[in-house]
Image (cartoon, helix red, strand yellow):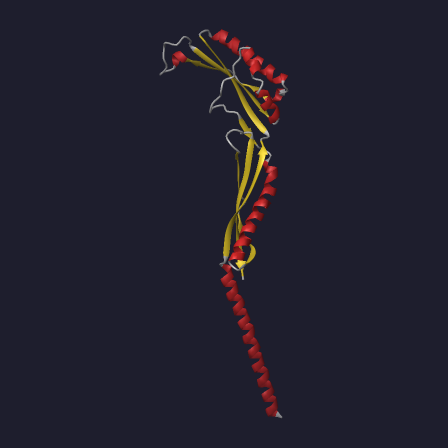
Length: 239
């Protein structure tokens, strides 16, 4: 009887050892798989784009007068400025959308490298700046500048120093939606990569906040903007 008990105890111990070895093997396999899968990653970029119309315009309106008598030039430029302001108000620009800067005067005789044989001495410039969220209205007003020409008022090109600027300031409201779209596009790319490599897409390891950019759609329509976001997402892969 005692011998049978010993045999029984030995069988139990052996069975325990076998189960322990099996469990250890499973743990080792899981650990090896985790170690192997830990470094299996794919990094992809997701893109989202949207075409929008500008919702803010800044329009510097410059006029110039040249001559030799400074007081009379100031009188003339002030009358011109008043006429331009009246023109803007006539077509619906609000008073608080108009700002008027003091005229700037260039004494050409004081120019170090200028020529001294000019027929005039002073060049005086006045700038009225319109800042409005009603882009459509302002663009329509620009087509009526011929009325000012009929009053002998010429609007000069501000060039690089005073260009017409169109902006899209409401893009902040679009950011969450565009980020979601960019991440979804990134996930589609990562999913395709996983399928091609006979793997399964796992969780996101890292992701950036996305790089937003706003630029003109083309050179001819600066009031139409292209909003773009690119995000980089890294996913882990598993078998």
